[in-house]
Image: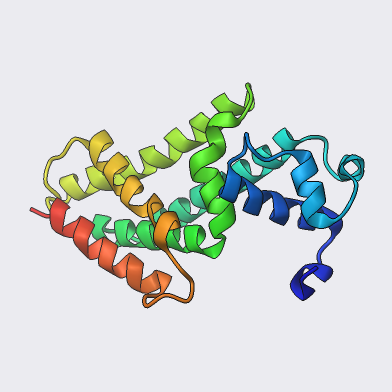
Length: 194
């Protein structure tokens, strides 16, 4: 076992292992046995720490959703004009994604496997987040700095561009997450400005 995981609780080790496996193999193709084998423990002993594989997915998805909602609320509280709010929202989104690529990939790709009623609850949180971005775009129009655009389409385009980072970002790469945020913000704002 890696030295960095020795200090973690068994539950934390389970979650980190599951996040990596869900990213590599997908949620449906990863079993509790796979998680246990990676940790070199019996599958049955996993259940003394967690109830099910579903619980792991729920925890990852809702933890990430909470982080995204907190970050956009902060952006909307701290900044007055739409451009600065959008830049901060983009920067925060990228920082969350790049801060934990395994969990981010699971959040973006595997949420569809949540069971009801948690799936509906997750969709509500996602819609709330998207609405915060729409509000920023509306403010930009009201401030007469952004073009009038189809806000739903614009927000989905922005979030798609941001979320794609999980497919190519490397922490040891040429650009930091802040530099990526700056470049993407400039690109997105260029398309929105009047």
